Length: 164
Image (cartoon, rainbow, N blue to C red; front, side):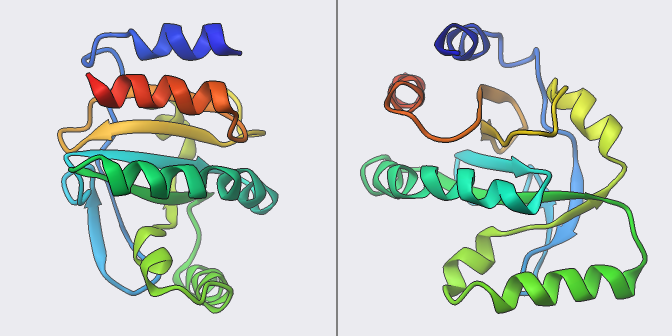
């Protein structure tokens, strides 16, 4: 697994590019990503299944430490769901918002209701059965990519990229 992380981390910034998507965060603010990412570099969690929130949660304590010690870094959670009609989107977002007490977490959660195939293709994602953790700059260059729950090795690999 670490070998994969290191290979992706060394890719040219032009190799993988975060596609432009517009959606609303759980606080109701419209964002066009990657332009509206708050950080110069952003740790982005792409999850496809509700059960994957557990894997995202394994990263959050580490990511909060990273943000505290690394200026210009922020993070986002992007639950990624197929396109659906507005009433269904409203119900899902309302349910997610109700389950998150922290306003900051709701600000960072942007549910994408999109045609997933082009999105996944642009990011080189071939498997929806695990979360994808990306380091993305505001221009959309994917600087690093890992999958799955947090491990010390993955955290160290991300730290190495952030230091450069």
